[in-house]
Image 1: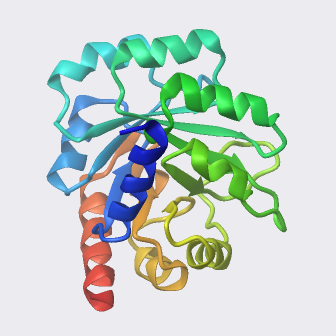
Image 2: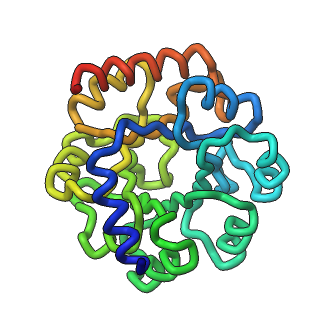
Length: 233
């Protein structure tokens, strides 16, 4: 099967898939095991040096043999050639790339080729009023809509535009959409109802401190997510 065929088949499968959860900003084996214990599908590790949750590719590689079996996601910002190589060598399963929405299309195509599109999640920094261009969809497996900030690439802890997410999801139902931004135990139910999200990403909303997960918050979050899922069944 060709790469485009694999991605098309994957999109058809996504129409039938269950709710999915990624716990991001993991920095320790303990927190990765918390995420596993609470039913996470994906474990996210931030390779952006400016993040308080930064984990180097070398540190991830050291941790990897002891990590739970969930899929591992590298979270980066506009990676250069060196970082692309380091991520691939470290053994991540997926790559979540944050970027300015004005980057050249050729750079997006390069990331898609280097990382393989079926493993690439695009996380554009979209200002209010800007929508995701359809031309990006063939390049990636998923698109993440996170809260916009003029000076940050995600990680704001602030709630995003759920109506915008819902609009994209309805308009492009075969595309995988991931909701992120300010999610926590107290608002995940409302977020799912308002956005229609079936794939969510949580980070600071289940922390005791930056880079340190709180098991009780994570348990509450997954319980509320399960309630929201049951209500939509």
